[in-house]
Image 1 (tube, helix red, strand yellow):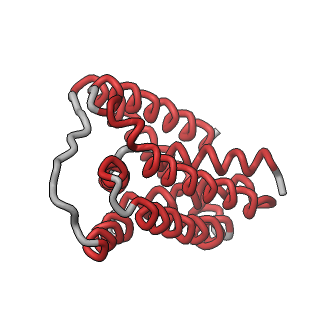
Image 2 (cartoon, helix red, strand yellow):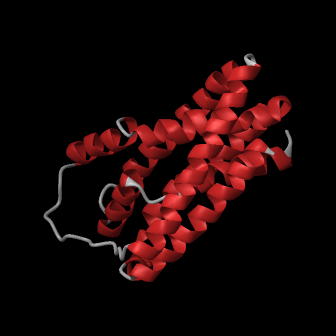
Length: 200
């Protein structure tokens, strides 16, 4: 077990997952509503774990066995991260967002779980982040893949449970567009940092 590689996996996964997309916005809203938060966090974290393992020990291993593919995967992943960062940096100064919480009547557990599964497994960004990018980045640590995977999975579980159960403490901040601006800038800087190290 390598603690440094575990930390790299943790930071990589956390930086990719922290972007407020459809899935995370859904988890945040359910956390604000305090509805089925445990079930939602478990589904998201467990699903991420499976996809990360597929990326590190599946896609990542395939890429490692084909050096030319690894080169394209690293440069392709870096290019995506740069564009992803530019998008968030631009978004930070071009839009004014806030988390709007609609006060609807409670929805059944079954319906919420189906929606959660759809946000998780029908979202192409989930596969890109966990399978392709995490898998490609993991090739830098071929001798410590398990450490990298454990770090990445730990970040996922920590993030989703913190987001779901900590939402009530964040609601006041995310009604302020400034909070979204700071988050977008932070995401952009992290994406560019990872892209640099992916090809350096």
